[in-house]
Image (cartoon, rainbow, N blue to C red):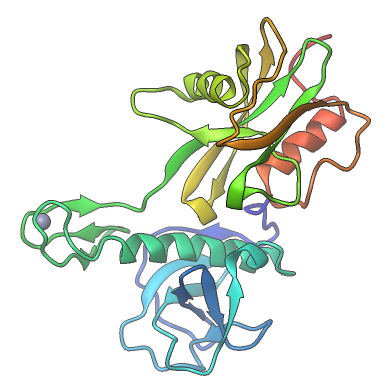
Amino acid sequence: MIQDIYPHIFHNEFDHPQMKDDDIILDFKDNQVLMRTEDTFFTAADVQCDDPVFLFRIDERNFYFAPLEDYDHVTADMQMIRHFRKQDLAFAVITARQVVSWMRNNKFCGRCGTRMVRGDKERSMCCPSCGNTVYPRIDPAVIVGVISSEGRLLVTRYSGPRAGRFWALVAGYTEIGETAEQTVIREVKEETGLDVCDPVYYKSQPWGLSSSLLYGFWCRTCGDETLTVDKNELSIARWADRSETDIAGGNASLTAEMIREFQKGNIPYEF
Ligand SMILES: [Zn+2]
């Protein structure tokens, strides 16, 4: 998955490190990252940074945010970045964008309207007037592998602009007052009309493109298996067999990993 960057190691500890020439500087415009060339990022040696924002570190290399629009640059779409050749850099760019979007969305205090300042001791935005403190936004959501009474997997395609090239699984954000297990049961019911039970946790994945933390769950049907698709959410949903080899796309997502686990027969239910 995209966060699996071994042998590289991601360090998210808040710090004020000394900038080095090969540290990477990132900036974003809408859904694009600004790059020096099509396959190189700006480094500290390329730009004059007045007030760079330290983001995180991978191995010994620091990543910063600083404005880059005044430099000659090219742009790359964030959806392309996830397929970037160097997976550690793809993960870094996506995570950096999550932090930068959060900072840009919290320039002013939501409580009193004062301009916020960056926290000095932790990754936060702080209001100097009323003391309001805002931390990076991370929205919990679930990815659900629904297994039928015959051991088949429910695969879906989103409707509208979220529709990707590959098959997806049921997914959705956790609502107020809800456990992740309750999200699983509610989202499957809303999107497909199915009643499901026995949710079993699989793994989680940070997904910076949507500022989410995805919780992967398996569950199984209990009752009627007729699919009633919510056309606002999905264009199609259907049952897939283990023998179907072309339903999982890429290596980046928890969805793809769960589909591959299903194909290998690694599900937590007996049939
Ligand atoms: Zn305030």
